[in-house]
Image (cartoon, rainbow, N blue to C red; front, side, top):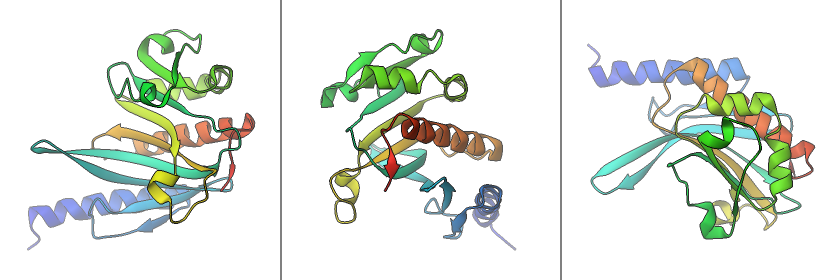
Length: 197
């Protein structure tokens, strides 16, 4: 008879398999562990959806994450978080606070970035703002891929990353996160700030 842990792992595996099938992606299956990941295409980009953990003091914080590497010709940086979550990260790398001039989005989120005009243009997309507002504890950012993948990517390659706290176990929400991520990546391409890696 299967243990409770095995039944839980099987259910998790079914979710990731269904997500992979629905997105036309590829599942890397590690028997229901958090190392499972789905890689799916958005245009020319390979988007990886997985879960990762970070050790805290006496705790482990789990995040569901999407990421894609891209060529960043103008060095655009931005970070978007709900007020109070990760809110001062951007200040450490010299980014300034930006109002995208859409309420209530500006009240809900702290937006920081290196190019206010481009960030405002990116978030002038009604659908991108609506998808973002649906997510509690979201963090969307462009970060240097070199710090994570320095052995694989040259200096001008960066990474778009979307993280939400916790293990997302709802298929529709996972698809919505994928849509949000794809829309942000497409918007960056439209602005000339992202090319295929």
